[in-house]
Length: 350
Image (cartoon, rainbow, N blue to C red; front, top):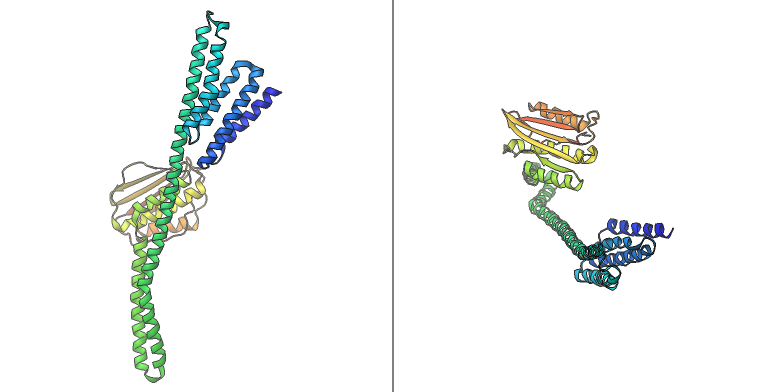
């Protein structure tokens, strides 16, 4: 009962140690020390039951105490609490086995165990440093993305203010003037209204041009965003071949297909990998997306039907097959791409 109870406590501590959430340096040190002393206690208790074989638990303690920021503390504890007492015990009892055939084996075994304990603490510390660096890198990347997003929002707000602020002020003034002249000078009021219409059309064109500039990031930028979305969902993007240079009129069309397909792969496929192939053929380009998900094909939704109809109107096609994952193939011809800025709903892509 004592053996199984102590072993159960140790296993619980060990699992909790490695499954805990990432914490700060202080918290990692606290966990490491708790695991170290807990493992030592378990080894002492079990030593009275199973004998010297309980020292195997010390290996776990050495690894766990090393998984924290203070390497000197880890090595000092392993050396002072594990290694030196073990070596002292061997030397103290050497007369009991001196000259016996198995004596040198004991010395070699204890020496190897002591070296492995120190190496275990050191290697665990190096692993902690690697994970801590990755944790810091992720935090820095998130902060960088947040700052970039804030800067982009400020830029858009500034552009729209510069673009529309003066124009809307002029429209308001001319509209008020036209309202006052309606009874006194109808012809002049009509002229002011026509001027308001002209300014409004120019402003609308400028806004459309600005919005197109925000959207017009092309296939490469959409591919970068797709990779971020897939990485976040734990899906690996495998680009099977070098990507050809896309003509400008086809950039937004294939970017739209990629965006909708990736969105639905992330949401519905349950895949772990998405293979992407973009090929240039006679008269057009073929984009193939093949995931390793469930492969179950639901009936075509509105988004998929709309996308297929739009591509067909351009002389292209869209095919979807299931089975071993789901495969989506979009063919876009060089000629007949009359709608470069397609805007469809979500693709019903399981």
